[in-house]
Image 1 (cartoon, rainbow, N blue to C red):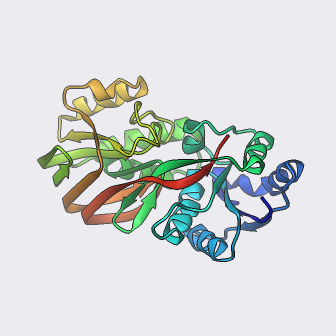
Image 2 (tube, rainbow, N blue to C red):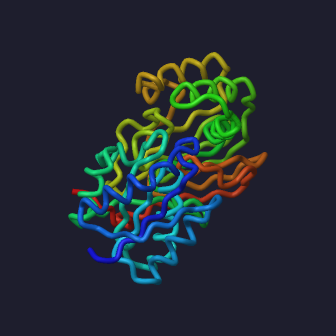
Length: 296
């Protein structure tokens, strides 16, 4: 592998990733690679940089950052892929939760991650599309992105505590969305609180879809209608134990497509990044084996 582009988000991990540029470069050099490293300067810039890297003929494009960085780079690669699979996509995990890389078995140690990239072995995994945007791990409407918005607004806390506090704040503000939801073999019409669509098992440090697999050609989804707030709390407590999917008010299923009509419009997050704040028409589609992941 001769021509490698690294797209590094210096703002990942609460602005700590920028201090690791030399560490990333050294790890890749020790693995025999001399990459071109570019730092993003603002939101969504990684998408265009990844698209450009494909047109410039790079053998692989590496995302250095957290799940949001991975999402942007993957979006660029998927947009540039056309009808076929993407160019090889590598990961240097220097974010906060690193949900995606942990769940696909990539090491957090940068030297080990660089060795995997240099080896050049690949695996085809699924990607998801929501309207005209892509995701690789998790994408949700209603309550979950509302909590993400609360999480983004917090400046002082970090790690899992930050997610827990955001969850409590979101629960206090929670109001139902009226949704018409259709999945492959079922649906729902009426007030709803939660719809999380998962390619991987873990999001924000929580195992939202414990049985999800990134290469089975299906989304795992978790749905909950409007229920009393105490029931929501009970479901959330079970989430910590990975048993929420067995709650009688929760639907846990698998599907290839989901269509949603929401009133009022719902926020959406994709891999932890807010991509809409009031969407009324939403279409999910799984893209089996579309993303070429560098993995031993």
